[in-house]
Amino acid sequence: MRQIPELAKPEGLTKTHAFAAALSLALLVGAGVGLAASHFLPANAARVATMPDTRNEGGRLPPLLARPATNARHGNPQISSQVSPQILGPVGAAPVADYVLAETSTRLPASRYAAPRSVADALDLPLEEGITRFHQQPVTVAALAAKRVARATAPVEAQSGANTAAILAPRPQIAVVLDDLGLDEKSTRRAIALPAAVTLSFLPYGRTAAGLAVEARARGHEIMAHIPMQPEGPQDPGPNALRVDLPADDISARLATQLDRFPGAVGFNNHMGSRFTADVRALLPVMREARARGLIFLDSRTTANSLADKVAKASGTETLTRDVFLDHATGPDGLLSQLAELERIARMSGGAIGIAHPHALTLDVLDVWSRGLDAKGFDLVPITIMARGKREQGLLAASRF
Image (cartoon, rainbow, N blue to C red; front, side, top):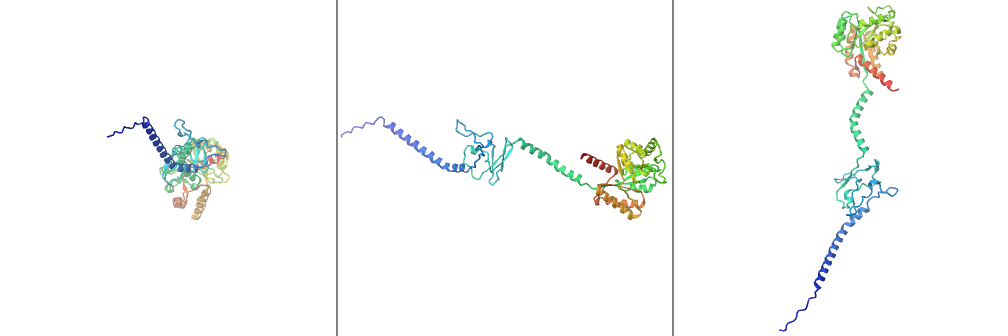
């Protein structure tokens, strides 16, 4: 057989084929990357096109809304420290309406400025469907202070509001003083059986007055001394009465002796005394003694010419004045009429003081009437509460000037 000689293979043929194959593979990979990029570019372009213009009138972006700086080495945007973080929330949650600039603490409307850029925006990631972003406001000193003040004062304001309503609209107060006690033991004990808020005033010359006063205090009553003073007419006020013709030292000595019979007394009022309480010189040692002992002087006001209130104020002595004599008129109709007048004055001025005597009818009516005051909107109070209310009113009036 004839043998066909082998054709010689070119030396560079293998290298050429390898290069061509590598080039084809690179083209195929590049085409695949291009197709993948074209799949995402439209969505991103549409999102960028719909972003609101955040520039102000001067064409500049707000300081906190400027685009983050770019990392030159990696070509990726960096997250600015001024950008507030975003929190992902459920679908349908309402986004925050306003944004606060930390540098100026100024509230800017959301309609004018876009929200601070999030991590997803900075990295140009595609938005996830079904996600709503909440923009967390930067914490400012003003915001912290406002929250702290609101939290600290809310309970106080609520309580202050309740206390203010009670002060502006208090219940009217009524004080009833029963005097001429200590002479008749039976009627005095009936007076002691009245509600404890009724104040009881004892004549110092009653034989059993001191012991009955102790009994009254044990039952919760405030007690006073009913000091006899000189009247205008010929009536006899009783032994050791204070008279205008006595020297000042004798007036002080008589008063001190009578007050000493009633330790624990909160004050004293005058028995008769229409002549004495109209004399300034005679009243001066009385007010001096009351001030030294810290006692209230209650002017029974047996005369319209009484100067007791003026002298007491001039000497710094605490004083009160009777508003109504409850049993000045005779009979049950007269007593009920005086009680109605006492209530009227209390409603009009916030407080009223009535003086009564231990007559049988008076004690019967007071027992029923006093127990029904609460239902009618009144507070029956002892005399010291009435004095305290007067002091507070005086301080309030003085503070207005």
